[in-house]
Image (tube, rainbow, N blue to C red; front, side):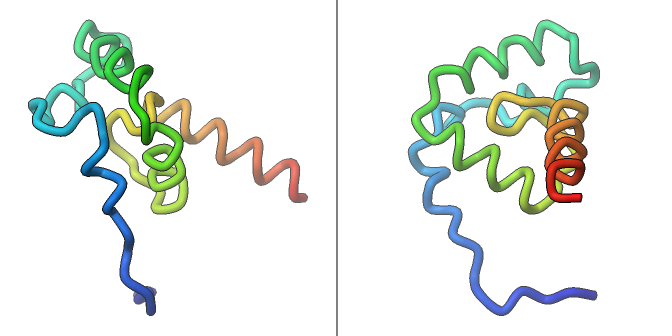
Length: 86
């Protein structure tokens, strides 16, 4: 198991537009559901959207809407980045 030597800085989450909202909204059953669209709308106006997405990509968050993107959308970004560095 890999153990990080430095602490994870999650202080950016305090400025998230999602703060105080029901977390379930950001973990919809289906990526095309009304809940998924509502979650993405919240993310669209968020001041820390890029930080949230960077976190999700860096830590390979598998579930939920992070930085305005679904798991499938984040996987596409990761694949594109791998192709660019190969």
